[in-house]
Image 1 (cartoon, helix red, strand yellow):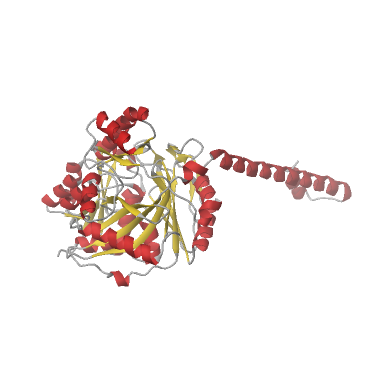
Image 2 (image 1 turned 120 degrees about the vertical axis):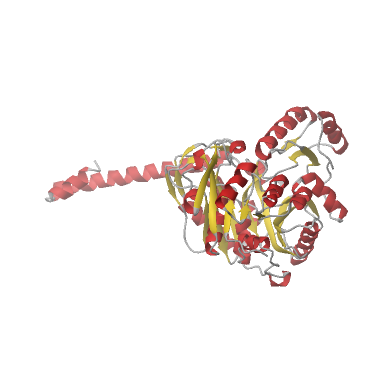
Length: 499
């Protein structure tokens, strides 16, 4: 076992800030890397050391394996934390880190190959008698193979990147005529995001819930889960709002799914933190979807209901220590909800909004947490994911957590770029969401930007009307005052403003 004293975070933005904060809590020194356009981001300023890694494109910076390792060796770090995205699920990078004599804070390369690769993961969990969504057990080599799958299982079908997640390289295909362009664009996006253009196909399940389980495994064959996260509110296959616990979960179903999640991880000799994702139908049947062999974006909701610092546990496991907890010691308290604040145009299919953040005022108050990777004055560029921050609210009940989140979203102010804040407000106030009656098609079935836009316009119009009435009343009061008694020059000038 080796005590880790210095860590390089091979990532950017909010996840780099998140890891740095736990490192500081533990007295561990940190090293940041940054691309040329990221030099003013908070993760650069907060780290003990920071090194420019290259130009803006991911291929020239955050995906440059050898450059990252060279910097790690130069900075004499003990370990590298990959965050999520970029190289976090790249088995070659994990092996290169180990070969350089550096600890990789994540699973071993063999486990990443088995579970980080979506195709081999399907094979592995099937062998462990865990149900999987019908799909291909090998990459799709050509269009004819995709056509054959669609004709066999029927449409819609889902094209998915074999080597990554986060909705990148994913396309729903509703008819055969869409296959050619969908396959080409999925492969291109997967190559750009993960350096791996392999695509596989699954049958697209109708109206499921997307439920995932956070797991932790050590080097001694021990594995536990930290409960579930409800991740069904998505747009373009990327999550917007997550919560824990899920309203559909019973103690019996949680135990059954949690055991399956741990079994799936241990079947791959997994180590460190990871997430097993399931689809759950209306009859509470669950199907393995994929494993994310890394820290998830939405891990804070689990931390809020368990009071366990998952990054701290990652470091503890990477040092060679056994798990800090047994399954019986995991207690769940209250309810947590996370909203991802994106630089997006919610009126235009959530397309990214590029530009400078001119004003930023965060939400605050009891039981509110924000994980943010940008500050006022920073740029949202075309090169990276447009997420600004993650806003998390906790409450003793789901209703209290919802009200706190709604209040926090009202407080959150941001100018200079468009955001999805109004969309988040709308979702959290929607009757179906409040009642917990939703699935992965919620946005598709109910979302209408005109509703949000009109409501916003009504508010602006109401403010304008109230302002006009107020100004007219002030003017009337001024005229009446002038006619009936003397007014000081100061008051006259003040009242003149309203004429």
